[in-house]
Length: 239
Image 1 (cartoon, rainbow, N blue to C red):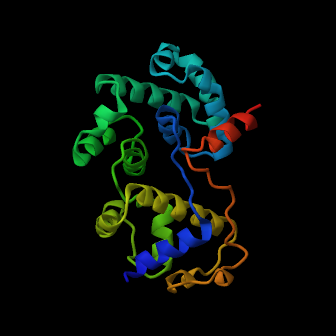
Image 2 (image 1 turned 120 degrees about the horizontal axis):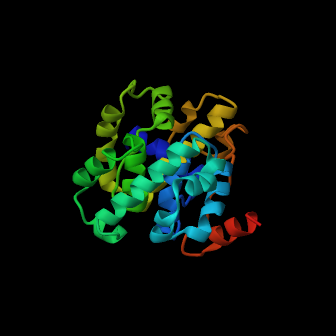
């Protein structure tokens, strides 16, 4: 088996399902802008502020200062408010339907997203996968660090790493591709707090006892979006 698949299997077995996508496509989509250069806690507060306006027409009806005030907890609020506005204007111009936009070929849609204000490779690929249902490999900093540590690469270029890992997606589902990105990032966060040697990830059928105590997920996973549990818990935490 490809050693990269062994790594992903071990991450999945240890951390479990992450369910980074939920049922509210618009809310999840805007979170991809809000999460840039901030913490999930700050994003949660900004999302709480936006929820009473969580419809495209209502958000577009807000003035720039009003939108800035709502997203302020997420930091860089002027930039993020403008990016959200531009994203929504683009959404309406594309037909105002996630399903309709998702019908576009992946390469075409990716190019269009990259042309938008504040959308780089990582954000575009995350949007493609979680919002528009396109399988991608997100070659972000966490992914580069992980696989460079494990002896692959070395990767310094987003496009190069993505090209090398994209063939692995042919054998997995969309949900698994989404999980790969989430698992890599969640594992990377444990390294930020307490760096440790994780070459054990290359071992097939890795027993749970082989994991060091530092490899503990910082934030609990979301729950299955079909259950609605995560949404209810999120709403309760806002009170």
